[in-house]
Length: 277
Image (cartoon, rainbow, N blue to C red; front, side, top):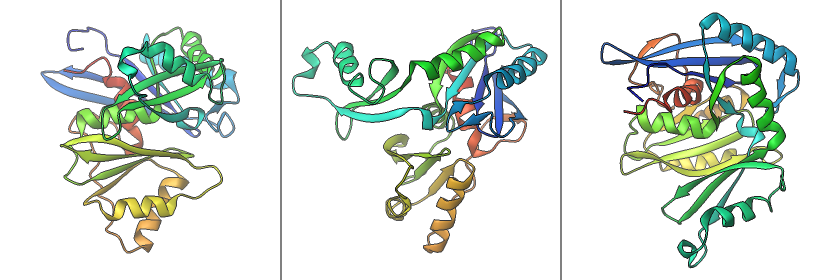
C-alpha cells in the first residue's frame, strides 16, 4: 500500500517475452515503469517451463541488475483449470473452505492441486474457482527462489489483468472486453460502471469465434486485451462481420515509463496488488 516503502517487481512470463513492472508513487502521482526482455522459442510452451535452467538464469540476471528483492508473478492462463461452482441450498450454514476443497479435488488435477476461489454475487451466486497442479506452482515458486527474491504473490494471468482493469480503467456503458492469452479467453462486461466477469473459454479443439462475435454484437464498445494469433483472429473476425472496430484506447491513466500494450495489464495488476489506495 501507499505506506509500504519498497516497490514490488511484477513478472508476466509469456512464450516469447517476459514483462516486468514497478508501480510506485512519485510526487503524489502514480508511476509505472515497464521493461521486457525476450525468451527464446521452446523455453515456455503451453504454459509450462520447458527449459527451467535457462529461464531461471535470465530472470536472475535481469532482476539482480534492477536490484529487485520482492516479486509477484502470473501463472499462464492455459496452465490453470477453471470452473464455476454455484452455491448449494443452505450453503452459508456449511464450512465454506472444506466444501470448496472437496469440489476442487474432484476436478482434473485430483489432490495434487493448488486453488483459489473468487466469490460471484450476481447474477448466480457462487464461486469462480481457478486451480493448477502443485508441480506447476512449485516451478514458478522456484524461479523466485533461484533469483533470491521473496515471492509475495502468485496469481493467474487473467485474474491479475482483471484486478488492474477494475482499478485503472473505467469501462464505457455497455462495454465488453476479451482478455486473450495463447489458448484461453476470458470475457468481462460493464455492469454498474465496473468490469464484471461474464464467461471464460479454453480454446483447444473447438473454435468459439462465433460465440465471441455474437456476444459482442450487443456491446457498445469492444476491447481486446492481448497479443498473438488468437487475439488477431478475434479482431479480424469482427472486421469481417462488419462490426465496429475495437476501441484502441485501452491504456491506464498513469504516468508511464516504457511502451504499454494491452498485454501489459496482468503485470500492472500484479504490481498494484500491494498498492491499492
